[in-house]
Image (cartoon, rainbow, N blue to C red; front, side, top):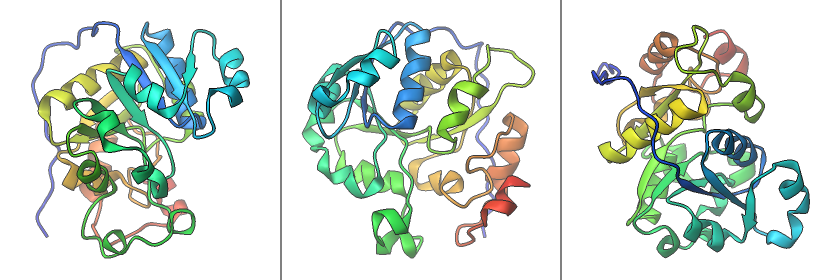
Length: 240
């Protein structure tokens, strides 16, 4: 098996990006938690769900400053669009809605929920590669899938905090990846570049880095320890 090493890029300190419009397709716990941090960082956010904005009055009142709309509204609104829906539904989002945009992929594969997807069961591809093939004219970045929703606001820390958590990021497009790493810094997290979408299996479900709070050094070690066809039980992952 080829040894994996994290990509380490020497860069100057991250600078704040200009205020962005962030659309969120999926108003579940992950989408709402990311929306709160993004609003606090000065970005504009629109949340959406599959039932329409008329069902989102509690979201609007519970997250001051957030906008709500349909999934198509959120796709059109965002310079960057977070897709945070069950994996089985990713094809329900028309690819043309997100053409030319950076798509943040927070999806995970749970066969009991999503039904069995043979190419994933055989470890022949990754969840993000499936999304990238569907959203062929978008720049897909895998992020926010390897953190519990309850940890997103709790674990966010200012830049330079000694107990800052790191999150893995994978993408084929280097520019889109760099922009997302800057966004993560603004939201309160360090980042570890985990490579391309084909390497994103290293932080999918049941891998050592999946939903385990780690700093940059610990996350790099967990990514390197992942084995393609080995899935760890939750108890083992929590001890990594």
